[in-house]
Length: 397
Image 1: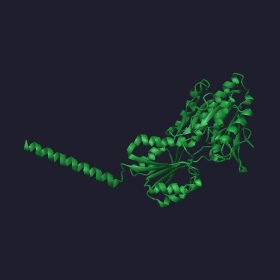
Image 2: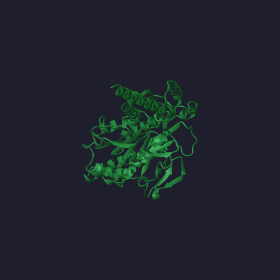
Image 3: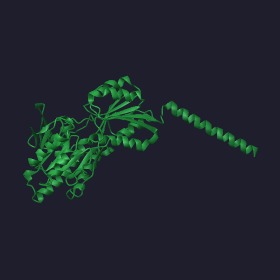
Image 4: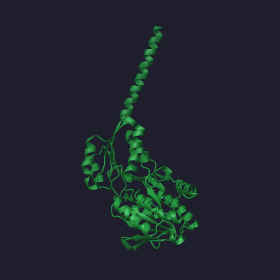
């Protein structure tokens, strides 16, 4: 018995020594069991854009539980970014995520070399020299816009076949914040999706000159509905356009296509589909990378452009939400799935392609011939297509 007892003790000591060595090796490699994570939002969760981004925080909490402490700051304007950023840095954050458009993040990152700063892409980062701890990322939104355009196109085709409208009345409206390339790229891809089903479709665009104004957005949508638009979509940050469609539907047939957040609750009779960027894959992978003491870009699945990353349906960075089967036309899901499968296979050159000429709104001498196609997000996560398609897109004054 004494020999058995001695052998057992020795075995336990060996196991304990192995465990201690293992933990020491983990510490030497820099692996962390716990992280402090910060989120800074440009708005609050009552707005679609920020709500959609906050889902990544929820996913992080669900995956890591008590292994992460999360601090959030909401309603932070771009020029007021410095104070909350420094505050979170002083709280010991290992990584901070931002969904705003402030250049202050990139400028302040070198002051905190041990913290990783991850910002949703807000400008062309290709060829730019950035701090090693500064990262940008964005889902390739044009893919979801194109697919949502298909859903709208199938519905418009149904309206034409039923005699509700003529082919010449296939007009879609788009409530846009600003004429940035991100916005122009999105609504152009949306129209291309519509025209892949209804070739006679055209678009009217109304700029609100603000990201978030319920009154302006609703008013713009109402104006375009009154002018004959049968489908409305948006790249702004309130439910105003969806409400305008729902209210107008009492007197005329009109439908809504959302972005970032499903509008089926506020517009159950008119909401067709919503496309959104999924921020979860990047946020979860970036946190995993910091925990494992690895570079973020070595862990994230996507197209790597230096410290800038983009991806689409193939990596789960873009998604379609809440196809309203009570409203959508028959065959919508099948038509959407066909395009999504193309994107997943890496076929992306069919979106910005056709017998179109685009004109740069800031320089009319700068034009783009789409007969040879244009590939979006080829070298940067920020969308760069910024041409207004002649004859098919009209900018409302």
